[in-house]
Amino acid sequence: MDNIKSPSDDAARLFATGHFKQAQAAIQKDLQLFPNCYEVLLLAARIARSNNQAEMALGYLQKAHSLQPETPDHLIINSRILADLGHNQKAVEILQQLLSQHENHVPTYCNLVEVMAQGGDIAGAISKCKMAIWMVPRNAELYTVMARVLCLQSSFKEAETYYQKAIELAPQEWSGYWALADLLLDMGRGEEAEGLLQKAVTLEGGKQWHLYHSLGMALMLQYRTKDAVKAYQQGVDLKPNHSSIYRNLGNAQRELGCFDEANLTYRKGLQVDPNDPLLYALLPLVNKYTDKNHPDLQAISELLHREDLEKNIAMELHFAFGKALDQCKSYDSAFINYQKANKIRYSEQNGSDLSDILDLIKRIKEQFTPVLFKKYQHVGCNDSWPIFVVGMFRSGTSLTEQILASHPQIHGAGERDEMGILCRELPYRLNVDSTFPECVAELNVDVASQVAKSYREDLYRGVDKHILRIVDKLPFNLLYLGVIALIYPNAHIIHCQRHPLDVCLSNYFQNFNGGPKFVQDLEEIAHYYRAYHDLMLYWQEVLPLSIHTVKYEELVANPQHHSRELINKVGLPWDDRCLSPHKTKRAVQTASTWQVRQPIYGSSSYRWRNYEQYLGPIKEILADLLPNLG
Image (cartoon, rainbow, N blue to C red; front, side, top):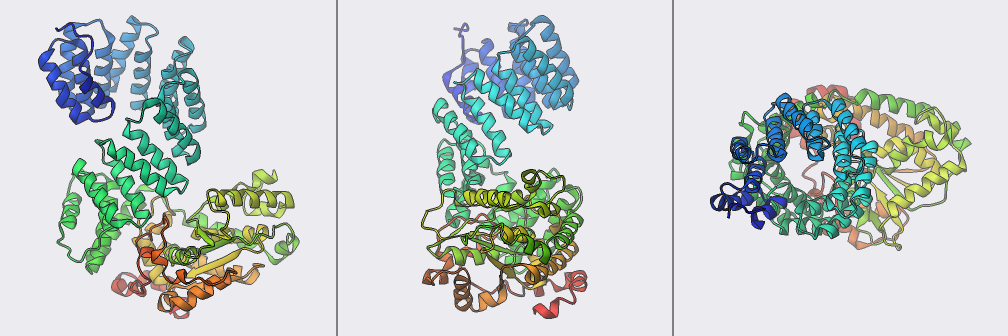
């Protein structure tokens, strides 16, 4: 029976679907039945490698070599394991020797290219892959490998072309669609990725949890959180062996306000991988702690004492621990953890972006003058649908949006970056050499109409036609109010304001993934606050449309009065649902997703007093602003 041609279906199926631990149990049975089967030994080596058992894998390969020394398959796997262990040069030598014996052998070429790239020789890997494609021009696997290597040097557009060629050569191979979709996800192109993933699911038969994981991410990019939850759940139902899908499913549930479900999902993920520190970092986002000795917090504390903890993981845990300790009123310990988290991110992010942002604000004030607004007063459209909620991050923008979005004729679109992208693209639309904001001096009716139309199409995509207003609550849109006033002279601008010490501290305490770099330093946040405050005063002076200011402390103290005022300012009749924004069912993709699900409360007002001993430097920076704002 040792002449078996292939290993058992169970082990191969489990391995193919990513269930590596279960596959290892299945392959052990095959090894007992067929200890001298070359194919069984190869699969056993692949499974052992996937379970990070390099020595075991090498043992299987050594036995496979004794059975069929001239067959290249075991040598290819052997080279990849050596590369995993850091022996890249030895791995390259094995693969090059194989090519001298098996000319035009595509698997050897593919693995040689990836090993070279793994060792840092990106240029050499690309050159080798181009040679292989020249020799074997119609092999989809070579194009796929080339695309992966190009991604390593951020040549995403070129990589996309190679992935498309791979699909053209193998249109029935589902993995090609998946690979291109994941690249598009990295590029923020969720709608295109979704189409590719649906095709991949159809071809593959819906057995790969990874496909549903990627599909969920594609739907999240399109702000389709409910659909994303369904996709992630389909992946979870396939019993994945990786906790990442539990993290993303829980995050999507949390954005929908389903905190109990999210908590359960995170804990199920910990059953799959009890050592996933990122899951522990998510628990404080869906739990309210009062005891610093809670088992969750003890687990986080133990993780933070691990010497092998990666810096980015430690950062996530320190942010989470700080939040939980703040809930427990252990303010000194909380601040220390926030401080450690911010120091890690600041050291890893290669500097700050504060000087660039301050320079941009200066140039905006120089460019957008009363003369410019008068010159272009007739280039805009008459639409009154957009509502822009601006201000500092953590100033009450999410609460303000939630109140507005509780009105049946208002849709809350969340933090959208379309306006910023459109403004930065203005030089290309205007065909001028100057950048934003200087390019605005060349604005014309046609381009203004194009920008207004593009923005409307993006924001209204998937929104019910009866909706009369859409809220874009990206705080940084305050940089683009000049353009907004020109293209949408009837837009509604809501400025959220909060006590400067509270808002600076809240920014410092927030784990902004992909946010501005200056928020990792309290003094830099304070300097930005001054610049933001001055810019808003300037806009109030020169902008040819009104700005309605909502002060957070006043809003939470008297929500009925200020909510009515808000709805009146955007030109709609009052609706009592706006008094219960915590009951509104919608996805909230911001850091305030927990807060907006609670009845309006004022406990976050003057929170800075708990940390006053740490705020001396920013008090000096903001000294003249503090008396004016309470």
